[in-house]
Image (cartoon, rainbow, N blue to C red; front, side):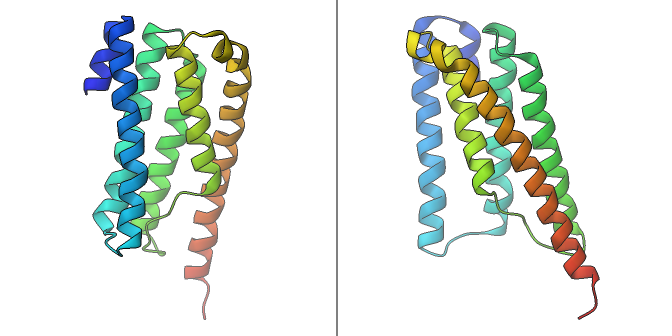
Length: 166
């Protein structure tokens, strides 16, 4: 919530605070997953709630940047649509025949990196980011689409394995 509040304030000071908190959130998200896997401390709830928290953060930032900083509305809609698809597929997998919680794939992680860099290009209006913004947007779109398709294909494969007789 503090990130959202700071972004809504639209001042340089608040933008810097938001970037600091966003950096902290991204770093802690990366390391808590690594530590949990290293010490074999992963939990079902952690595998469910961590991605949902990530989606709330990214989607919230996308909406705020669309309202306040000119972030493309269509890109925000694409990000939210893909995340809704992923959540629906995860629910189907969790309660369906496969009874499993899907893991993110390299394409999804790449999409997240491109989305975050695109968002940063709207937060830090330096020439470097302005020059590469279009490429970041295109990269985000390509990776969002690829990761969504792969996620859905993996779901179909898991469901077909579970429904085929052994």
